[in-house]
Image 1 (cartoon, helix red, strand yellow):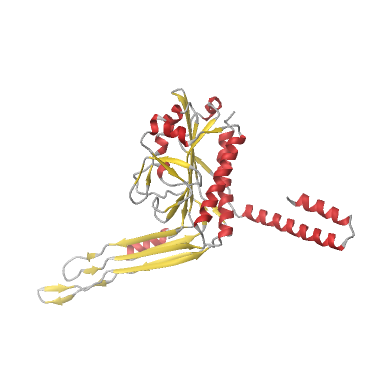
Image 2: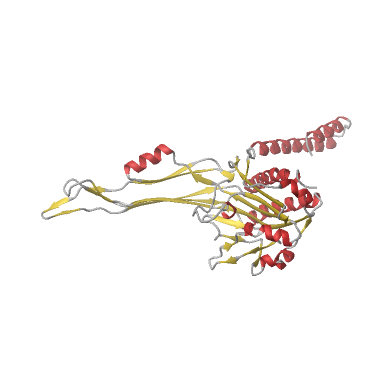
Length: 372
């Protein structure tokens, strides 16, 4: 109900003289107007979606694909702990034995934890997003293919079946990975520490063909609350001075950065926000879509922007003359800063759900423009 409803109620209010009736109507009007103002504020606090396409090909051919969709992956990566460090190795500096100095090793560590969320809060967000996507798929006239059919395909033989609805803290450092409750998916293997191995997109074309040319979707959404924030000038001064420094800034986002920065994985396994599509009926009938973000979707009014810093300076000793030797006395230096950021769970859930929906709506608009 919006402003039009409120005005209709107001019109009804003028047609009655009962004090009780008027009082109840006034309460309804105030409630409606407050709801409208909150919706407007929520919309204004989420920045625009700027999609980035990678290797998109043959999307017009989706018009020829069967009206079936398999959602191979649907997961959110929620950052609950920001971790960063800088370490610099010391040693001798200078020329001759009597003009050189010895600098200590130095390390700065920064940890920022997010407080106020419960496990169910994160599951609720993912469940709502998954429900929204499946309703869109069904409204477009598409049948959802079950995990049973995917598991039976030749391409997926030997893959493990997993259930959503729980939290996995092993996938990416500082992040909790969540898939929807009641949803099942396939992974190549699970390591002893709980980390899932996939590379699912490399299987998607062959799987699509074995599923009769059905569309295969994979959705991954990253939700960081803090990011590295040291300026270029500060970094340069740090290199020249020999100290270690880490600076981070808080601020909730649907992120566009890779969570796995090892350089050993592609964008599809990086943990970055991604909505991927594959459909293959044959060599001449192949569709690919990969929608990432050019920049983060900023989510305001939930976590205040605030900078945190951990810094340590190396110790330098010019040495003491001890006859045939020169003795240096330095201790390696370490700085460890730990902070906690409080968040309102209701505001977090509402805002992240709305921002994720805004991203998925933008991608679905691109996909649906090519569907029957």
